[in-house]
Length: 354
Image 1: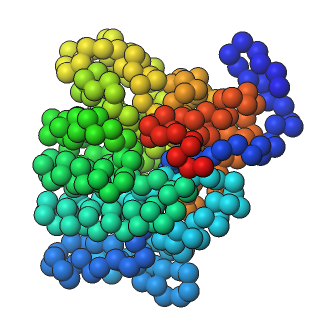
Image 2: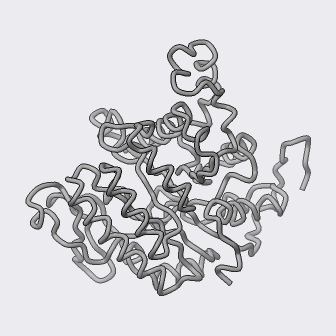
């Protein structure tokens, strides 16, 4: 391995998959059996699973096909088998974003969140040395969201996952601040995942919703939290963003320049340079490109990038950790990216799993 300044030079023999303790902070899970919420509540486009053949199900929304999923999307034992094969020691479990249900009435959203969380924690409790749980909360109602956040804490969750926006509101909305504050006070980690992207009507073709829309949404979420002063006011809040921060890392220069030249438009709620918050939050490693991974590690620091794969979906990293293992990082940096940084974000210890 050759280190030149702060750059790592590629060598061909660095693709060995060393057995290092590995935590995947970005994985999704569904309940095997989902009630017919359309029928129960009398409205909406709720997700259902049609188990049409062994180990496979169709995700349906309002009787329309959404995607095919396999048993690793709901079966903890199957996930463990695949993790063993892929050298993943621990998965952090969160629901699939289409289950957020922010568009429902607050009461119904709370009921759905409770159902999701109770099902998820059963998987964790069965194999606590292999899984960590992130809950779902009804962000459309601040009081109910905090109530369910507190319950998530009481049943053993280590944090919650939220969307990149809540209906028509960005994450800078003042109504969300008490939720962030409660996360900090309760020592609950926050994972922000894009969903129902902006300009959706323009992205039906070429899978643009996933390829362009999601990275846009993640950048929107990061900027909203920075410019509204969330990280300034809550320095102990532990937030991780999916997909390597989306388009944010590549556009931080433009973002900072805008802050500098038009503070009257940008710095209206927080007058701290956005670059000052690099290193104050975590990004997962799901970037699919060695140069991009090297860049985000340099940008936000080797202590703030953690393995995330989007398991079990096809746009994720299909061989967990392969990109990190293939990088010419020193072994201590690989250890950070594969587990140490995840443990820091979760405020847990390796001994919790061994």
